[in-house]
Image 1 (tube, rainbow, N blue to C red):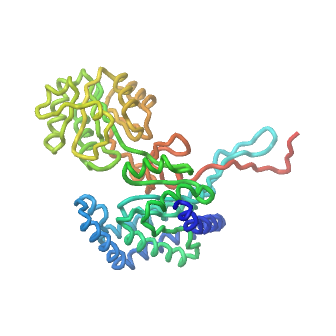
Image 2 (tube, helix red, strand yellow; image 1 turned 60 degrees about the vertical axis):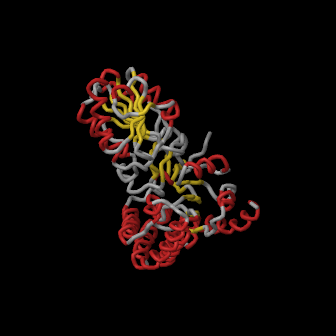
Length: 420
């Protein structure tokens, strides 16, 4: 069956490859104009987009989907406007493609440096949120890449309606329509076929639940930029400021519950157990957070439940937080490096040497001192937008913006030099 899907999807790959190569010869202004037209076409045709979205919502409601799922799926006027503004913001960002850096002369007289270039053809595989269609297309076109989009079956009509408007805008701007293509087949086999098309696709970027991400990691023949989950920690050090600790922990856990940069575990130095443990945990409980506590902290937190070994490695995405007392910085770092998901980790401390050690020794794509884990986001980092978060060890780590969708190639500038 996968071979049949490969045959069906191969033309998308061929067209994407050809379109991406044509884009290399086009100036940044053409790409920016296409993004501006994309925004305009979304605004102009929002009635049709919302009509398609209502079909998806009806199907989801009939399927018994919960309120949170329906909220992620829903496209109202404000959300369509947010997509349009996002595209305009991408258009305003500096174009990384063709940027030359690190030029230096060698003894031979040649100049050696690096130039930013697109990754090539990207397969974006995602679930639920239709806004990803516009975000991914905008970032890929701006960074000189072609994108093959495959959204979840639950948002099929919404995604198709958005993709049609984006392709129309590409045509209006004189760019190849096949820079943005949408796979309209909800069959799971279509995903399997995309993951085997290494002759046409250079990188796979997934966004969705742990089941989808695990499957892609296991099946893909193509390099994948992804993170599997976000088991993020806040460590309250012996030298933490009490007010900062309370604000940061509350924000990291409760500002939004269902995001990958939400804190799922709290570590507190034993030296601060008497004065900080109970106030922080009570403030969390007042906001509806269930505390799952280690054996040492459990008797000190009324209403807490006993944590299991499984809790230390769990991404809850819910109003639950595991709490553990640690003997100090060494134990905190060891615990994080054992149970963390290499996404985002934070320390609250006024001790400069402790902060420096935490930054150096904690293994994560984002490490923070005296700041909420909720800042791990492309917009907050000044990237303008992000296509996802990476915990990979190769090419890019952390929020992936325009530069993360490019790579370096070496360039050499000479004036007739030959090697002796």
